[in-house]
Image (tube, rainbow, N blue to C red; front, top):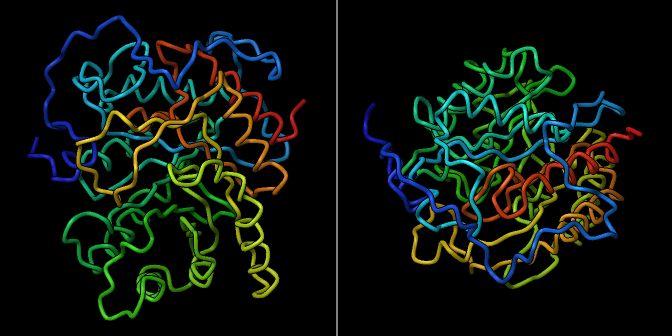
Length: 363
């Protein structure tokens, strides 16, 4: 296997090329911001094993998807970079693990993953390919969270070529996420796109889309704190819904939804509002590690045994999102995961299933 690109080292602060196994301490890594995971009575949900949770019909047809991170090495879990650890250490390249993640996600009412993707033929690409192949016949539909434009020194033509590669290579898969028979792509870190001859990021994206998808035969959804992106993209979502500086930013969901609906009225074109929810956050253990994304102040949010997760869901549901995005299924380094962990077991899978049924109108 060739040497992995720089971004794996700076993104996670670990050697992604390393494959040696290390024993993991059986002691859960719990900080003061994460109390004993007993579900509060206000949630009226009991934590049950995920094996007892069964998939449900599509209900109203709305989709509930989750951010998925495909770059973990088995050595990470003993390095104490995360406040909690999965039930067993794993490597993201293991097909059996990917298959298990799909099954667990589906049991919790999720319909697919947005797999964080950097470039063709790297680890993220190969594992995205595995996600699609292992979803065959499972009614599980995934796409990419496109990040090629933030790879160091990438050129705008490379960004366009990478998008063409994704659409050409994967969009015909029966398990690629689609709406009205159009493949859906998600984009993060919008201002980081190489400008080329463009005067601003929005015009740079317009040039890229005119190059890659001039007839709008796919659906592009932007991470958006600027409604002007709707002049180029077909929808908006918010990636990070809480911040060290601005607690409870998730309560601003109605503002973002209004941007999308106002754009629909002004243009006469359907735009998608994708609401984001998350169970918690804690990236305080990553201090001192480089990160490919724009630096931000580390912080932690008390999960409150699921009450924080419920608050984010209740903030988004009244905005009537076209799609629901969970951040995240397995972002352990930033502490937003619902994947079963040593400190809270299956609690967040159970809550996710409850939220999924409510969002889809399933009783």
